[in-house]
Amino acid sequence: MHYHLIGIAGAAMASLAGLLRAKGHRVSGSDRGAYPPMSDMLDKLGIEYARSFDSSNLQPAPDRVVVGNAVSRGNPEVEAVLERGLRYVSSAAAIRDEFLWGKHVLAIAGTHGKTTTAAILAWLLERAGLSPSFLVGGVAENFGRSFRLKDSKYFVIEADEYDTAFFDKGPKMWHYLPRTAVLTNVEFDHADIYRDEAAYRFAFARFVNLLPANGALAVGWETPLARDLAAESHAPVASYGLETCGTAGHPRWRAREIRDGRDGTMFEVSRGDRRLGSVATPLTGAFNVRNCLAAIAAANAIGVSWTAIVEGLATFRNVRRRMERRGEVGGIAVIDDFAHHPTAVRETIAAVRQRFGGGRVIAIFEPRSYTAQLRSFQSAYRSALAHADRVVLAQLSHPERYNRRTGMDPRELAEQLRADGVDADYIPTVERIVPAVVSHAMPGDVLLVMSNGAFGAIHDKLLAALAHRR
Image 1 (tube, helix red, strand yellow):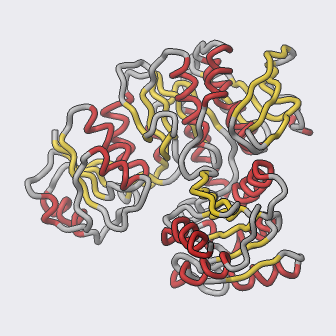
Image 2 (cartoon, rainbow, N blue to C red; image 1 turned 180 degrees about the vertical axis):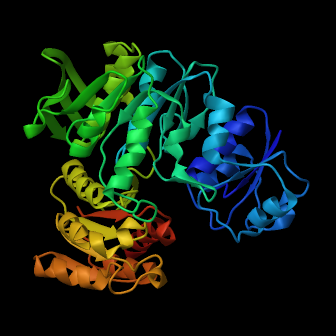
């Protein structure tokens, strides 16, 4: 069949394009403003796509048109599809119908940690000899890609709660036929499509309700909403968390005696009252310990051995754009991270400080996601960013969408951080941020760039400016 993907360079869409090609289908597509790593992956796969949207891209007529969730009415290709009566589907429905029926799907859902946990789990299954297919929202460095199609009964998938398409406003994760599932945590996000916390909770409740009684659910026990949802599962529940879960009670899977270091993290794993042993991972940060525990619990649910789990964790190499070291010049490291929710920002700063020791952490944050641009989250960002030594705030990605009442004010946030004793500046553009940061950077500093977009290729520009300064 000939599939045409509108919005092909998105994380999920580019991976779907690769899966469809691997299955033998003809794949074309279109997008604009594509950027790495997905643009690089499409080029490497040899998948040609138009760099703009135009109805002529649909000639000759494809058998199926996949409409990405970032594409809306008014897009010339969408309008042509509707006017000509071409057959169209969402990416989530295409994934389900082409790849998931008849498979044992291991679906990773939650507000934070989905991509990393899914990549860890896929690698644990690989080390166990199960050769899984997988689809995750980033490039898993152990595999060098974000997807793989194998002749295996197991399929690991990142189950996103964002909406599916302009014609299907339910979350993508409802399409994914989970048998073994992980619910990492639940904390209100995506206020652009969920009116309140109750609506957000309902999305995950319905996902949990899809699990069969002979399935399995691993639940992060440290967020109250996730714990509440566990009670609604028809499948057996395996709780997990750090030893210091507090009033939540003791989870079944626990990480004890966590030892941080510049080369990663070691911790002891217990299941119930039984201590299983020590594991080591190159990952850092408490949030990554939780991600490892989630993958351990899910892998155990399908019979992966402890030996394979230990070997897999020790050799896992992370996901691109998750604390990814983009380069170092003159003892100054540039780190790229996808963090955009306040909780993720706080945890990432803490993990960077743990990994790089005593140097200053310079947090460069682009308020790009819908959540990041809302005024209602500004106080949470104030608290999260206060953990950095210096903060640089860029302008809102779409300031025209907000007013004084609804939008975050990054200039005001910088002033608030300074009132808290944090060295902070509002510098709107990349062109101004780079010289301002580089002129004051010192050996030992870590330039932590946080954005869920390309951020004007700021990482390469920082490295080039540092090299030129030398």
